[in-house]
Amino acid sequence: MSSTVPLRQMRTSMKARRTVSVGLRLVVALFLIVFSVFPILWVISASLNPTGSLATQTLIPANPGFDNYRILLTSGEFPFWTWFGNSLKVASITAVLSLAITTTAAYAFSRFRFNGRRTMLKGILLIQVFPALLAIVAIFLMISQVGDIFPGVGLNTHASLILVYLGGAMGINIWLMKGFLDTIPREIDESAMVEGASDWQIFTRLILPLLRPILIVILILNYINIYGEFILARVLLKSSEQYTLMVGLQVFAGAQFNQRWGVFAAGALIGALPIMIIYLLLQDQIVGGLTQGAVKE
Image 1 (tube, rainbow, N blue to C red):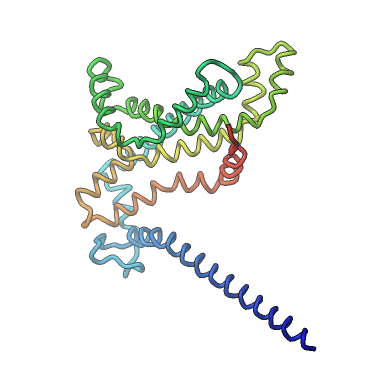
Image 2 (tube, rainbow, N blue to C red):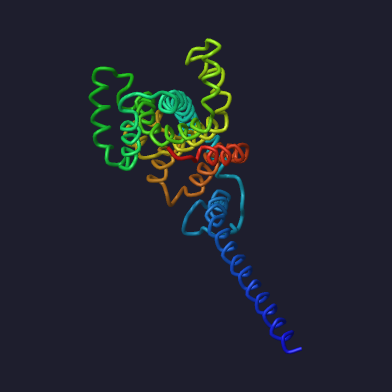
């Protein structure tokens, strides 16, 4: 009887500690959810607020409506659809070209053995350590001077912006792609070589189909990063017709932020739709590709 009482007390104590632990986790989870969702709800509320002013902004607007969206999409006060199309164009072209270059480079690093291979890989990784902000002045001067000779890739052109994005988007992606390629058995390559296949045939017909998860991951990550990039686009693009959506909204906000906050919020929400749709449709491929590619050199 005496041994039963301590055992019962121990079980009660363990149950109480487990209850407290679960309660704390729920509180932390609830706090993180509120912390994450509140800014989104605030922007949605601002886009529905007819006053369009920060001074009168509340979480639940007094007379919600879609006037801000009507002004944004149909008034013609500023070229919203042009900015939106520019962002889609620049992000799509950059993502596709970067994926092609990254895939071929990673295949060479993974399958071929040549002098300087490890040094080049370490150099690519080392370059990514330095923030891109350090190179903005150099990039601006370089594009400006190149534009004097080749105007098509000078300042205020999408071609120059795409070239700059391509130079900065390949470092970590090459490592990610190489890690995935290292998980593919080399016996596949050797068997194809015995049958007389060339390296290009092996790459295009055998390896590429197996790379589908990581190809989707890199394509999506590149697209999202370029679509939301602001600093380089703001430095290299000068005219309103060439602005990407992020730059256009910032210029609009900087000029009329307090008076047209509702229109700005509506533009931000519409601009976020492509990224949200991509994440919702391809979230499983993103997680699977990242985990499968997480291997060591």
